[in-house]
Length: 284
Image (cartoon, rainbow, N blue to C red; front, side):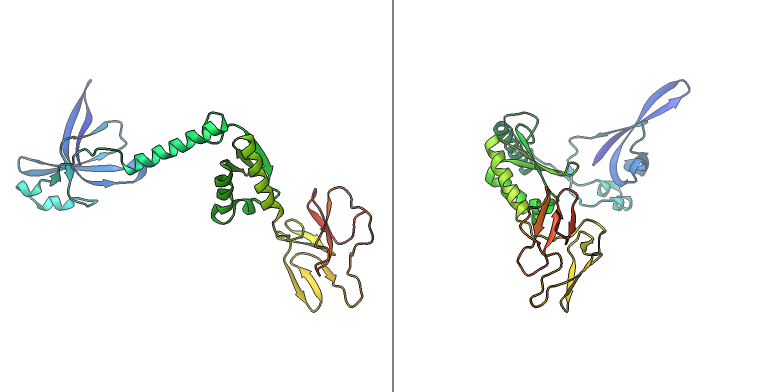
């Protein structure tokens, strides 16, 4: 590449611009200390100057019509060993291509898709506009997104909506028409409610008769006993002996409590959905 560099020179009370035109043989990238090395041949002698790229005293202008260099190197220091015509940088003429490039075609397709979604949503300001509904994630963000984003992409493709995960409010924001949002909310809630139960309390919780630990639910069975990492200790039922914390009767549970793992061979425990705590004693 051929550059025309203008260096501002101050002489007494006057200021002038000193031009220097040559071939860029190297660029040293160092942030604000980036420098550009320019070389030219003057009266049979090679002259090189190093200019700071971010200096306010230097202006850079690419010389058009010089052609595109054929050489494919980052540094053109080999020109220092050449003299005469051999020191000239070989260039080739590049004709202007007709039609759009692949990047321009891709960007046009993305703009058309955003405009379509904007028209469907009935609002302005991009794809995340128009009618919006918020779905509480209930701690199942990974279940909603899926492996590699497959679940959230499936919901978007089947319903024609756009979904954005709001990590601050722990909700999934669904954008589209009211009918599309209703269908997308239904699919998201199916992913949430079909998540496997891992039981247990929150981070670091647990004590005697209560599961806990890091995320809860890590257990190890050994000789009829069950212990949770960071959680409690309980004895499983034997022959004809009910398990500790078995349901006492048909009394309804208080508001916010749910019975977990009933009748599948494991111990029955109760989960408070409000405070996210568990217990093996049936609350009253």
